[in-house]
Image (cartoon, rainbow, N blue to C red; front, side, top):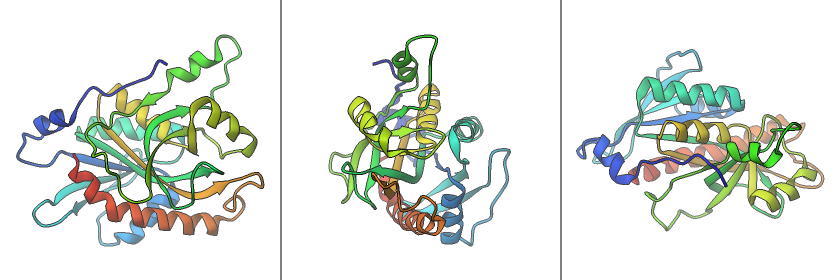
Length: 250
């Protein structure tokens, strides 16, 4: 399968940072609600503006391993995700790009609250009627280079394939996404973020928490923004708590 791959390795990350200081890290937060929760958790930060969204710097980690991390509101959907990813790369030249956010889990494939360490992204809402459909889908498939991470992952974290599209999930599509691509969950932005990062040869870590499960009856979040907000708050609070440990791997 044709896909975009990053070329840099953990040793490359160390070389870029000179081996004496932590790598430069930019954390992309996509959806508006996810960014809202981040701002609620860190009300003391000073938010600056960019053409793509707000950003702030936060010092994370213990006193001996702390580092300044840039948080950028990337925006929802593939267009905003691609634009903000390229902006972050051009503006800050990060050694590592991180995306934290939510996803809709596939019934029978994952559980609410589970954290997906994304090892492949698929953009599935491409409809090609003039050529080979599968070839066009494969063009935007991105394999994540995660060799720099330890084998033992934290509790309730699993590697998995994420399917991205500019719309919410329909249950009748899920069996096909599982069978054809091995996907376990879906979101709106990961496919674009991973692809742009790979094109720029910037290592990328995507962690998405399952905020709701899409089943034959739909999702409890559909039509209930309050349910989604609560699920998002739980996911983002957890991801931000464990983020320093993940960054120590870089």
